[in-house]
Image (cartoon, rainbow, N blue to C red):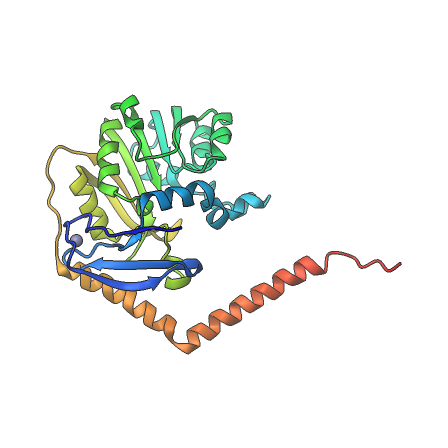
Length: 317
Ligand SMILES: [Zn+2]
């Protein structure tokens, strides 16, 4: 049974000045998307409690979100084609070699495999909650660090990692500031933190059928992502809203700093974020949009049915 809890804004700590924008998310699951009116951070409130999420990730997540594992075509797997290395080389010294790379939310290790194939580092490490992947990772020569980013795994690796990858992970965290602060302890002095998240200023797909999802506890835009990094003790090296590889993704390279960098707390961010969500939801509620989606889904179902029915020859006795 799902249990819910209330949370305060992770950037400005506001608990009162929050507005609920939607109560429905992907797969029809109750998903309470809110925006902080003080700083414009968007997050789920209320949301499932930690035990409910942990149960979902260990037992159900792959069934909902990693269905490409069931196909044989590697082109369907979006992860192995992901351009992190190209982005890294275009931002830093392109021939740089690294000691230790950690991938948080590694899945079966497809992303790290790209680094391994390019001989980019000496050692590879992974944190991954989904139980079946542990053996696959070990088989690829990747050290399995933990199945839980919130546990005390960091004690074993002080100032250890030259790169930490968090591809579409931060928006899943229950306490992003705590996670980012923990990562400061395990990054080397000049270590690089790579974060990619969906861009809440440029959302793609339907809100209620795709973009709003119970596993996405945070919906970052370029202001709130910078704020959460500053609050956690990082400086931004480069941040981009999409590139030639991926239009709708917000991605950032950051380094740790001991300087207290300022937060940008303004209701302008709230107004802009609210307008993007509310306008999009209004459009979806219009009949023409709903009809188009229904038609698209019906066609997709017919195509699927045809594929499954026609290849089998009917042999009459
Ligand atoms: Zn706030």
